[in-house]
Image (cartoon, rainbow, N blue to C red; front, top):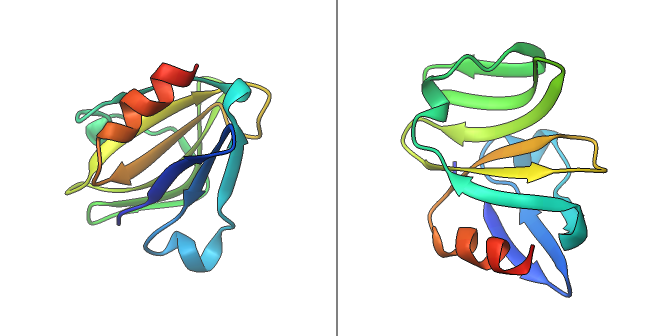
Length: 112
């Protein structure tokens, strides 16, 4: 479930892949609302919290999850490289997305 992530005019533009392209709008987030990004290969095995709504079935993790008061949007499968994008002043506290191109992590962190 690869997501397309790029930076356009001081905004992070995320075009969702997989099941989310049917059920969820894409994201456009001002760079000023991003705290940073990391690759976290272990996050898909972590407790995601309460689904609200979301699915966690056969390696597919999609939807909104709430854990310890933090709201996260997930769109990743166990075979993807997971990126965690930390946010403020947005609907979600973080986005966990499956990607192909890990260079986007450095691009994000160089701008924040």
